[in-house]
Image 1 (tube, rainbow, N blue to C red):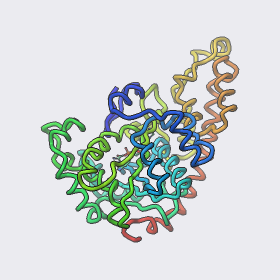
Image 2: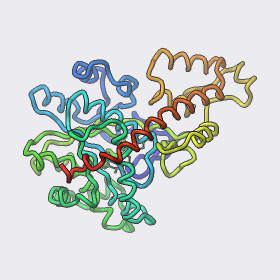
Image 3: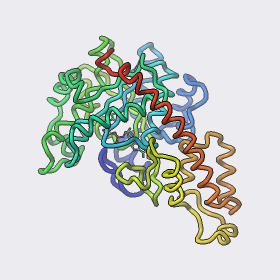
Image 4: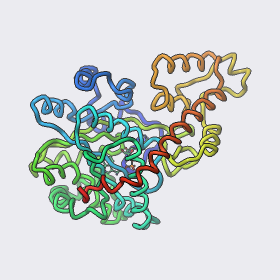
Length: 369
Ligand code: TYM
């Protein structure tokens, strides 16, 4: 298994990541503290899609004492958004609504330019705009959502970035990120820029409050180095809440834009979705007769995961689907047809809202506030 901010390979063992990254599991006790604030737990907490954290308990302690927090998350705009990216953003919206907090959202066109040999800044900046539309389409409101386009807004981040960069040694950066002699020096410096939005709220408002970062666990190395230096420059350590990866449609592995045939992008059209779903890896048997007799295995099925992560909120209906699959009452074709329909309905709504976002996108830009 490899899990870094730039690569996720193999079968991800989340328990092992908690141990190796040194994060904390989300305990039932902590979840009930969240529940007492939010009402019914969000599906992604109930199903342990968010499974790990750093300092969520500290953030809640401070909140109880009247110190609010801000949310921070982001996207590396290397291409179109896929539905895996939406998983932490949907959760972020929920936390924003329940706690009435500000969100800082970083679009790292600079990062994607530096790490991809073939990328141009023109392309990554274009994707930053396109990806912002996907964020807005989920329902974030301009009053409390601040989008940062790195290359355009670097003057807002630069002094904080320097404070951070000055305190991270090359040796720490190399061991945290696996830099090699051949790594370009832009990339070596870059993690300080992803750290900066953790602290920008104080610069903008004068309020020193912690940031809580919802993201998949691949981003964790950034926060490890940022947390070490935060107190030295007068800020709270940023807190994290980590989610699992929505798998791709192939056999294992996360949904990844670099594998378009096994990813569902937000702008995919209905026929493309049907085709990708039709070719998806499932836990089915070689023939329909065999499957009716022996049942199938939802634990290895990519399609079942889509119901689990996003498209079946009703626990009883999910359990019934699982049961029917296991005993061979429902075959893969039927399950695939259902998910293709649900996905296409979701995407159609998303695409409509995304189109409308073009009229208001400027209201979210941190520089226009
Ligand atoms: P990026 O563009 O790789 O990913 C954007 C967000 O999506 C999460 N993610 C996934 N979540 C569930 N299932 C998947 N298959 C999946 N693939 C990706 C990522 O964990 C991330 O939360 N460097 C960052 C951009 C960034 C950022 C941040 C991310 C800047 N500041 C703060 C999170 C928090 C990047 O390239 O993300």
